[in-house]
Picture 1 (cartoon, rainbow, N blue to C red):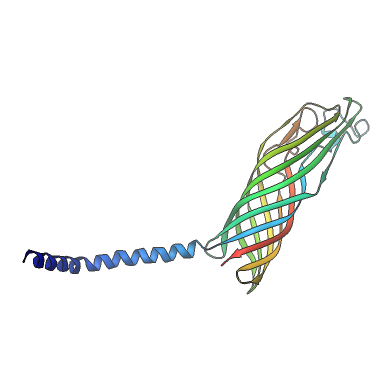
Picture 2 (picture 1 turned 45 degrees about the vertical axis):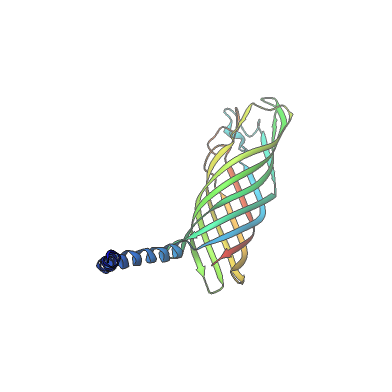
Length: 242
């Protein structure tokens, strides 16, 4: 008899709170659906080349007391084209916008050449280094068609400089290197759907003439415009996602 009474009470309680259960259950289902929509994303593989590096001083009259007559080509430099590889994830937002982040591995090879008879510096400083970068950009579509997409991005890039080789030849002023750098980043990409959820295209990214100093010497590379990163990355992009 007690068992029957307990079953009746349970049925009455369920009927009493049934509307509340349905209300909260419906909210939870709605939230799950919304989260699924908000969490839709793309994964990207970027493979290409990198050009540029550290900005060195090539304007000879930036040195105190220097003139074009007595300091011609006091400092010059050269960079080589190296490899670029990136893995990115793009989180889609409303109104065709997105947030993109990931990790990039960028190789750089660069020389700074000193040829100054006034200060008696005649030498060459060779850098061979990797740049490990974590970009965060805000993306929006410039053009979107059924199977094609042109996208512009702008944001910041946090960089860690891993110096592989630093070779000094001849005489040169004292200098310092920084392992960390923060720089603005802009880019553009074009992709076209190839098959299924895969798209293939091209990308161009550049770090601007602003940010954190990476290289500085005691005479030439002291202005605010030198020692910063200025690079261009370009190549193939493969996108995967819905």
